[in-house]
Amino acid sequence: MTDTQWDASARPGSIYWKRNLTISLIGSFTTIVAMTLLLPFLPLYVEELGVSDHADIVQWSGIAYGATFFAAALVAPLWGRLGDIYGRKLMLVRASLGMTLAISLMGMAGNVWQLVALRLFVGLAGGYASGSMVLVATQTPKDRSARALGVLSSGIMAGNLVGPLIGGALPPIIGIRGTFLAAGGMIFLAFLATAFLIKEEKSPARKQAAKASGGWKSIADKRPVIAMLATGMLLMFANMSIEPIITVYVAQLVPVESQVTMISGVVMSAAALGSILSASWLGKLADRIGHWPVISGALAVAGLLLIPQAFVTSSWQLIILRFLMGAALGGLLPCIAAVIRHSVPDSAAGSILGLSISSQYVGQVAGPILGGFVGGHIGMRAVFLGTSVLLLGGAAYAWIVRPRGAETRDST
Image (cartoon, rainbow, N blue to C red; front, side, top):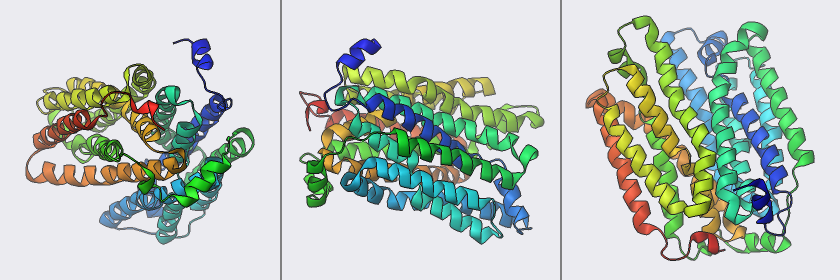
């Protein structure tokens, strides 16, 4: 579809949606880069803050990293509901300003407790990328929402890919503390762009309806929403379940020990790269043929691609299969957000999308824990095969509960 056709189909009252998408894309990419760039040097910073024992360094690094996602999972529905009432742009302004302060202060931490507290604060006050999903989902014409959300998802995933690369390059040049201050400066620019360039079309009727309704109870048919909450959790679980075993698994495939770390990084990045390249295209496809076929098909294809991953004999086979799996799953996040957007009233969209984000964080936490447990006690092949069964079951469930007849985009 050409841009002219895309513009022509935009509904009245959505004249700023392209501008909002552009600023949200830039802001989400920037904030995700700033949040993830600490990954390569987090253990070094923990040691610099006074933790000397190796086991303690690993433990505190895990606590500091996980604190943000734990806090974000708790407050995402709250910020979503407040966005329904007071405006989604306000939530982005709040998130970007809060993250600017927290990440800048991380560069001034005096001990590991302060670092963990600030990571918790980032989770509590942040959520720019998730807030952008809500803003774009609600401000974009419904029949173009999956494509727009696909573009935004590509930016978010690109931030996850680029952040650690920048985090590995900057500290030798400006130091670890200087890197945090630079990241804070990046997010401050996102704050300024959000505050002055995003234009949200506010609806007093929606605000009153959001205050009056309880969010969840205002949904007439809850089955599609429940299916999307489960699908979001399953998506993150599938992406993260093999993270704890990747390096060990690659070590069995690579004869040269010095190459294990590098190839493990390529394997991890391959899925993200596949998702970045496919998200916009799959979102566009979903706008044309419907979200539910894309969701069911993506889950089924990813589930089938996991089976040969359990039996690969060389690293290049694993890299190709992970790339293809990432490409299959790339369209799920925009489709999940689009289905929720079409299945709930506008006054409850932020609350339910926030709940969806929380369910994804649950999968992000549960995936590595269960994957590591199964890999350690049963075997690494069991992780791939078990995740495959879950994805194929999720595909069947999504197909069974899909609304019959008209697409959900026709509902309000």
